[in-house]
Image (tube, rainbow, N blue to C red; front, top):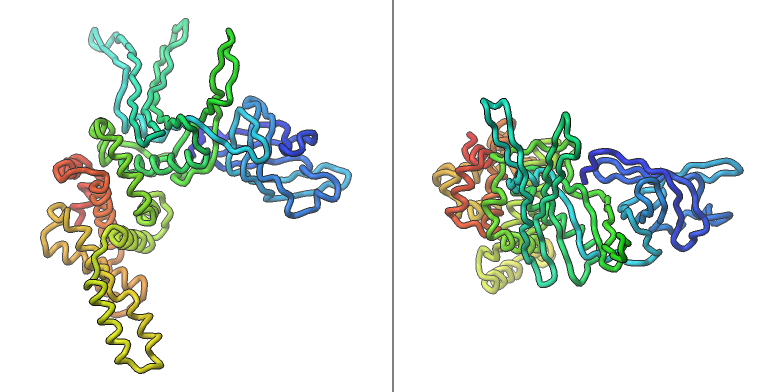
Length: 462
């Protein structure tokens, strides 16, 4: 999670099961959703304070500016016990829900979950701001028209909407008149859904945006509402309390990415009419190819500091993707089973267990066959038959050399700049396959290859 400004809030904290013992402390929320609570003293009293298994998975508090807060999944990282003086202890916090205090075992159920994503404004590409210049650019007229939300039904109970917040100039505007527009996403559930389920769904949608933008982008400005938790707004009217939510999201890069529209695989205006279908296909595919997606995204968020490990993740990812989407084998299962038993029966008895283990995956497709199958639908973008065969051989030799360190493959394995080029090719093959998973037609993929500078460069890198 991107937190543009680190927050430090002083206040009092207590366990829901013991509201009478309030201790002072400071809640810190830093970039990346890193949350820490530093308290003076301990929540337990007397001899109980010396227990290592002190249970306080949930802490509530009252802090400056935010008011009530709920801290979830907490544990000590540093515990000091005072003997007549003051002692500071530090506590890890996984999630903060600001604006409400939940009870000890009360489940956090929300009806809406709102978040922004880095680069979302550029990806959406809609603006209600219009600037008209006149008199040789010596004067300008600025107007703003609020943009309508775009809503999609993504399941029987869930809707996703792309919304637009804005601010207008205050009065009097003597030296500055500023208009801002910000895109954000809201997921709504009439029945209600747990906070953990909303976070998981948000991660999957953010991953889709990471893929579309072709950068590691992080969530920010997260909030939620529950129709059961309301506040007075005057004249006897109520509205749901908007709770700010902080947590450490998986999709995160230390440095905010530089977003350029021409580097994106595709943008919202291009898929606006079918975005609900794209989301549904992505969520459905996630259940099947999640390990392959994890390996792909690990190469995009700088998890690998060495080119060798980046290559191995991409090669393994392609193999995993094909294994989970292709049921083909070297021969029909019944035929292979009969063939295997014949071989085992002909082997010396004391070596049969060893042979049985060696033959366990013998009917699986080889890496070169899996690479060929993942390239086949997009071969015109990758090169002619000779180019593809050389690329497959280079990938296989490099994977075998780096995995088994077979000295006979040292000369044929890719190294240095050649290895970087191979990584770019593998990344492009991944992206072409994921576009197909999202339902992009051959013609649409052709346009993506033509218009996306990054993808075009990867495919044509020599």
